[in-house]
Image (cartoon, rainbow, N blue to C red):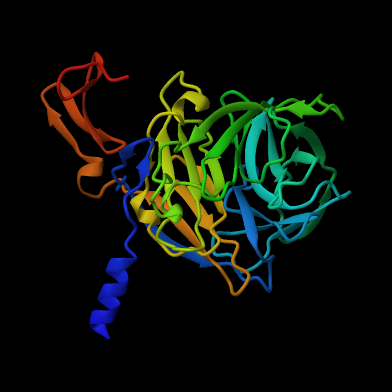
Length: 357
């Protein structure tokens, strides 16, 4: 039994990802814990999008691709629903991801009504509304009036989507297609409140992992495809994009980018990412991810055959080299995003004396 178990673990260890022609190295600066389990009897089934509340810290908003008229909020333990937020009118269907964001000093929630497995839809919408206060004792159920933005793709075709993220720095919405055994595409739309019923055309940004190991003669489940969720940290510095694969669980990754000062999201995600090693986990139908802050993010799954776990990932400050700070006369050695720098009165420098970007 022990031998068989060891063989199973070895055979299912997550392989390294070949992405844009390079084999990516793991990012080891995160640790994972199961902080809770979503009680679907108390909440909703098939969670496909989550967003941390910015109005009422400590709660996570969740939406399902099985319902299209309400979302719920729980704490990270997922045991009991803290709020059921109903829409005053039905807008769209097949909700697949959500994100929170700030616009003109107001907190909004965004929901993508854009799931399209058959790629036959002609009506795609981004639903948005002001985020309300969560008050479990006095307002366990609330109603909100949603707004929406209609959009089409620049190629005039239908596309399946499961990932949406919002950039607080530039007030832009990013949508990523979900494609089987092929590359996924990234699109952008500036957020405004005055679009009305006018149909907007998304701007194509780039492909993800265009040279990943999806080529002739390779196993199709190995490459980075089937994007299911994405999020940008509240300060805009960090980007996460995740996928899932129902054929082999270990061929799933969370990709991580550190966005440089003055850099656009579009430019950042065209650089090589780092896969987060702590996400080497079995998360069936893992379709949801969101940042709490720069040092914490959550994932959960779309599993409808039980109560899915809620995972919390935290940056490993204070553990070994990730938090190295050593005084060297007037300078300090500091570890930032798993890279060692020298911090002096003149700024931040690499170990070979170059000014850090």
